[in-house]
Image (tube, rainbow, N blue to C red; front, top):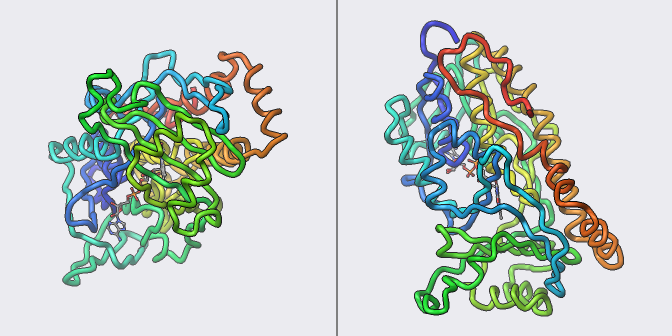
Length: 406
Ligand SMILES: Cc1cc2nc3c(=O)[nH]c(=O)nc-3n(C[C@H](O)[C@H](O)[C@H](O)COP(=O)(O)OP(=O)(O)OC[C@H]3O[C@@H](n4cnc5c(N)ncnc54)[C@H](O)[C@@H]3O)c2cc1C
């Protein structure tokens, strides 16, 4: 970058925004996060983070804190929804020891926020909604919603989520419904199950996905094993807002899943949206860069939305610090991220198709998966899980390894 420090404005303080600020600080660049909420709070739901994303957290020195609040998995078990019979156990561990974690979103956010508040290169402005955007040749003007304040930024990082105001301001097509809804709930430790060694029931069973025609369910431990996150995904038209219809749809499934649903508080419906694949990740002469859901919101079938946001953050920081001109930084970022995001999107579509197959096609799926050796199942995902973060070092003159799969 040029000798003087650029003013970098990050719009949005979610996973994407907080991680981007931390990665920028790591390479020596200061930033200001503008977050519209008055305080950062996360909905009570879980998240899986695979080794590719956690390699960024490792670079940031946050892996020990995340391991302390998460639960490490070495496989994801795919089950037949109706019977609970295991179809396959897909290995997710990494050869270099980087973990695959399931954790509570609030725990991830707390770890990120704590690091942000300790970092002198980051200013966090809460209650600061960006309502206007004026891209120019030499700077981008941002207008805040309250009080008419404006700021001039060299770079604007749009990390403002699936309903991004920046995307709207730039006249890009919005994210559209995928036609599916995620129903989320969390089974907390109620303190009554300690004696039987199950706290709460199912917390020790790892990450499980029950597959069935047009719907599936996923459960995994969070809160260091003190709670279980349960997500049920159905077609949106199957469940016009009624939780009892949803539950009826799973009532003849595996007893283990039915037991979890029975213990869980009423699930919250969460219609799933996806950003158009054609949306550019960089705009405004390279001065506006999109990260996370603002760039590429995707349905959670591959559990990679936040993972991709975290990868974006590291690649973006490297791209800005290694170039001395916004267009070059933008070109570098887009070139590194576009093929990877396209590949992840393809995988999301593949999972959606395969997970929701009806009989008799599901029998063929089960047989094919059961016959595939464990090593081959892991190798199928090497391109995804074995990506490793760029060095995030402030002092390297050149970096040709920005976000390259190993
Ligand atoms: C059911 C479900 C399960 C999922 N499971 C996984 C999983 O297992 N693994 C995984 O990796 N991903 C998963 N995801 C995806 C993941 O949750 C998202 O990709 C990720 O949270 C996106 O983060 P973000 O920071 O881009 O956006 P957000 O978290 O939406 O953050 C955007 C932030 O911007 C702020 N903001 C918005 N507009 C403005 C404005 N105008 N001015 C200032 N601030 C603004 C918002 O207040 C918010 O804080 C899942 C998603 C769903 C729905």
